[in-house]
Structures are given as C-alpha cells and as structure tokens.
Length: 370
Image 1: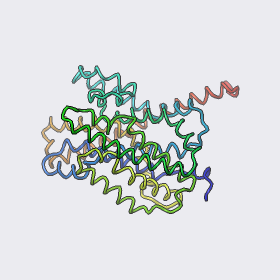
Image 2: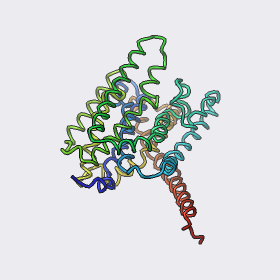
Image 3: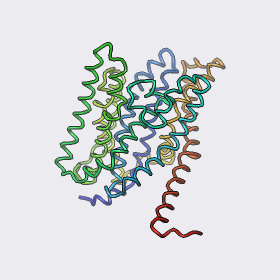
Image 4: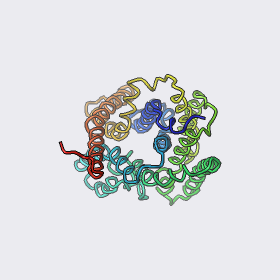
C-alpha cells in the first residue's frame, strides 16, 4: 500500500476541473427559466436535476478538506483560512444583491441580515433561505460543515477501517431516511415550505453528504479502496442519476439517489490523478474554469436576471426560444466570475492569509521589521 502521507499531498487537478461542470449544471437548472417552448422542455430534461449539482459540491468539499488534512492544524487556523477563502467573494456578491434589492424591492431587505451572517439555511422560511442571492443558501450549509470539520476529522482519523465503512453505509442510509421523512411530511397539504427545508436546505440534513466525501478521502489514503474504480462506468452512472433527478419530483433526487454515483465518480477521478493519467479536465482552460467556479456559482443568477432584462428591453428575449439569451448569459457569467476571482476572491484570500502569517510570525518571535 502506498504511503498515506504521500497520497495526501498529491494534486488532484481533475477534480478542480470538475468543479466547473457541477457549477454549470446548477447554471443550467436556473437558466431554464429564460427559455421558451420546446427549448424549455429540453433544458428541463438536461438540467432538471441541477439541484443535485449542489450535492456534488458538498461531497467534493468534504473530500478535498479531508484529503489535505492530517488532523493536526489548530481549529483557529482552519476556520480563519476557510473564512479567507470563502467569505470575501461571498460578501461581495451579497453587497451586489442587496444594492439591486435596494433599488427594485427594498422591503425584501428585511431578511438580508441572515445571508450576511451565513445562517439563512437554518431558518424554515423561503424568504430567508433564498434572500439576496439564491444560491448563497449552500454557503450557509458549508459554514456549518466547516464548523464541524475539525471535530469529525479527528474522529475519522482515529476510527478503524471497519468503523469507517460502517459509518459510510450508515450515512448513505441517512440520506435515504431524510428523503423519506420529507416525502412523508409533504403528504400533508399544510406543510408548505417545511419539507423542502428539511430535504434541501437544512445544513444538518445535508451534513451526511459532506461527511461521506471526507470518509471517501480517508479511505483512499488508507488504501481501503484497493481496486481501480472504472472511470467511464462511474461517469455514466453519475449522468444516469442526474437524468433520473431531472424527471423525478420526489425528494430522493436531491441526495439519496445521486450521492453514491458522485462518490464513485470522485473516487475514479482521484485515482486517475494518482496514477498520473492525462485528462481533458487538466488543460489550462479547464483548470481556469475550475478556479473560477466558486465565483461563477455566486454570480450566475444575477447574470441570468440582468441579461434577460436587457434582452426583453431590446425585444430579443425570445430569439431561438431563448437560447441566444441563455448563451449570452453563460458568457457573461464566465467573464464576471473571472473578474470576481481575479480582483476580489484571490487577492482578498492572499491578503488575509498573508496578514495571518505575519501575525503568527510576530507572535512566535521571528517577525523582523524591514
């Protein structure tokens, strides 16, 4: 078996490229709203399972953090670096959204405090969960995952191989139980938003997906997955699960069905990188898109609304049943994400990390004033 420590530092560039594909699926899901006629139906078939793209992000987030972790860094250092990585671009997107609401619908700003504090997904109300920037609810979940990660990763590292496998099976069963519970609750016509909140938005019920990603990473590092997971069957299985989610209206489409295919896809992709195999997702373009994917995710809904509004103003919104606007929105979203990453996300992260490094050096008595 390979040394787990050597595996932990191995770059998994293909997974970086896959991040944009997941963000693109979410974009397609939201972009269906600006299409017409048969085009809207086609988009529904292709991107109707777009909510499952968030499931992929949650699993991948747990995997990446656990892959890079040895369970030795301080909680403070972990929290600070996660804040530096996530919050600046998130904050900028919220400011932009709040400015739009101030002009167009100022009464909706009453719930804006929740996303700024990253607690919107804990409140069982769509007015709060989807406030200011619709996709931002998932960052509320991620904030909870990050809060819990230093504790669960130590537990996972101390767990035996059998316990890890047992826990993984239990977490998959938990996603099925959550979908079943939400389905049962939705049978009551007075339940309203509550079943959606339980199955889709509540950080506590989405946490199993994150933990499954972390368990997969540790299992790979320990060599528990000895056989190569075949890539193309994993890709096909993931696509089938997305297709199934596009036509299924039950809560099982959110995580219960796609989570295992996504785990297999991430495992196959990681093994591909560990073996040093070539991949189209390792090209410079794919890597750039992967790095921009977080910013792309944050701003794409704003871009859809802005481009569609302009298209309606100039009377071109229905050209090609909306595909012209859809394509234009995609281009604008990519360009905007590149700008947000280049001028806010990356420099803010570098500044905050550099500031913390200087503070740490000064505290340890090795900071020299120039």
